[in-house]
Image (cartoon, rainbow, N blue to C red; front, side, top):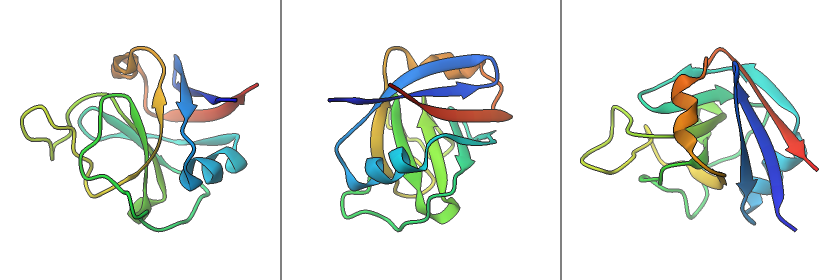
Length: 124
């Protein structure tokens, strides 16, 4: 059964689905999570109470709507467009991230969000 989460950034909310990775397991077990978000280009990120290193399959380039964990900042990241590190059509995190899920539907809804107050919860 797919594990779904709801991500809220200010007054914007979207559902996402976690993959079957060990990183997704760590995120799922930590939910619910609240934090204060920041943006970096078309990425929202915020520190979470999960501490782990870079996975063997960490990615330096992600896809639109990917959810990633950025080990240097213990951060939950939502990618909805180019970042300052992007080149061409690539979406590049500041450094490799552990991809653990994907936004269901249009991730660009987060362009309208207020990155200040963030929350992530299970959808059961």
